[in-house]
Each structure stands twice: as structure tokens, then as C-alpha cells.
Image (cartoon, rainbow, N blue to C red; front, side):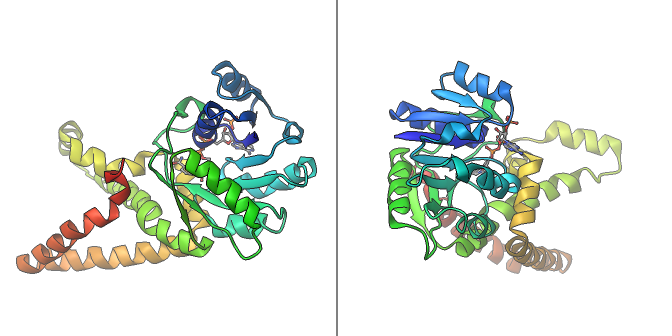
Length: 284
Ligand code: NAP
């Protein structure tokens, strides 16, 4: 198949590497000429340019730009696509993307690979990024069965684990496990920076080890992506952040009142619950 990738960054570049190695002809569309030249030089794509008209022959197009430019990109892209072309995106938030794009192209199915690193850009693209990672498709009533089947088959060929759900359900679920952790982790770092004694601050930075590395990792990632999560998943993220604030207030109260048994009960509950959130990790 001829596969188009619009947006040659971490996710678009990683898809290009794997899809090309599976034997598809991959045509990339990047914003900057230098990115396109790098993708060609590294053998990630068969051809690449900033020209959306180069996707006229594509059977399937993956939209891998930042969330904020997806709708405008599709409006520019659709006059170039052949009627049978199937369009999918990789955006981290689904409801606003699906609402904007589904009316523009009949053969569109929303998607979200649950894979990434703290890096961004084409240089950060990796082979095998999606192996054993969840990949969610979010079809709606108007989505063509063929689009779901073709994109689903490509997702399975990446050795990702395929899930399907409604866009709004996806957005509420990822608010808990992806977008809330980014804000909590960033807030942790911001709180540590409030230490006013420079000697304590410097010692804390010298002593920080694996626990701090794990808990601060997602808050130290791509700022642009974090803002996009908050902007496009505002309602669900706020709901989860407010629950988190209630839990923090409750824990503060327990510690102020020296209610160690009650604190231990919470920590036992969280210790038991954690593995059920890490099932896809244990399958890696
Ligand atoms: P990225 O590494 O920053 O790559 C974004 C790409 O889009 C770059 O190639 C950039 O081109 C291009 N681009 C930027 N602004 C553009 C514009 N105005 N018009 C056209 N192209 C533009 O980002 P990413 O992490 O791959 O994220 C891409 C998408 O994947 C986002 O929608 C995000 O929600 C989703 N996603 C990300 C992750 C993750 O963990 N990072 C995981 C799952 C899904 P140049 O390099 O030429 O500037």
C-alpha cells in the first residue's frame, strides 16, 4: 500500500520507519524542508516534501501533526486525496479531533497510539515504538467499516494492541492515566523549585535519584504537547485534577491529625491497585 505520513516528528517518524519496513511505500509530508531531507537521508520514507499534493496516490494517510493544526491541515489535504483514501490521526485527544475531521472526510477514523518518549521531533523517532503498546481507534456512527478494518489491520501489523471506544470515553480515560500524571508530575517539579533555602535546594537536586526520576519524568516532557492536552481535553482533565486535589487535601488532613492507620489503609489500597494499571507494561 502507499501510506502518507503528515507531520514527520516522533510519532510520524516512528510510524514511517515501521510501515516502510513492513513493505509499504511511505510518502512523508513535513513542515520544514530540512525535516523532509533528513527523513529521506535516514531511509525512513521513500519520498518526502512539504507538499500535500504528493499524497494524491496515498491509500492510507496518518495525520501526525500537533493537535492544534490538524483540522486546518485536513482542509488543505482533502482536495488532493483520491476518493478511496483512508485518513486517520494519532492525536492524544479524540473528541475535538473526530468532531472536526469526520465531517470533512467520510473515510476517517480517529486513532491514538499510547506510545512515546520525553523527546520530540524526527531525531527522536524509533523503530518498534508501538510494539505491545495500546493503540486506540475511536470510530463514530458515520465511520466507514472499511476505514476501521484497514487501519485496524495496520495497527495490528505494528504489533500494537488494538482497542476501540467512543472518542469521549477515550478522552476521560486518558485524562486519568496520561494527562493528569503530566500535570501532577509538572506540579511536583514546580513545588520542589519553591524551596527558598539555596543550600537545601542544591542538596535536594544532588540527592534526587530513581524515585524522583520516575515521578518527574512525564512532567519534564514536551511542553507544547502538555499544553495541547490541557487545551483540547480541558473538561476531563479538570475533573480528574479536582478529584486529585480532594485526595491531596484528605491525605494532608490525615498527616496533620497523625491518623497513621488511615494513611496506611490508603497506601495499602494504592499498592494493591497499581498493578491493574500496568497490565500493558507487564506484557512488554
Ligand atoms: P513532534 O515530535 O513535535 O512532531 C510534530 C511534527 O509536526 C513535526 O514533524 C513538525 O514538523 C510538524 N509540525 C509542527 N507544526 C506544524 C504545522 N503548523 N504544520 C504542519 N506540520 C507541523 O510531535 P509528536 O510527539 O510526534 O506528536 C505528534 C502528534 O502525535 C500529536 O498530535 C500528539 O498529540 C500525538 N501523540 C504524541 C505522543 C507523544 O508521546 N509524543 C503519543 C501519542 C500521540 P517539523 O519537524 O518540520 O517542524
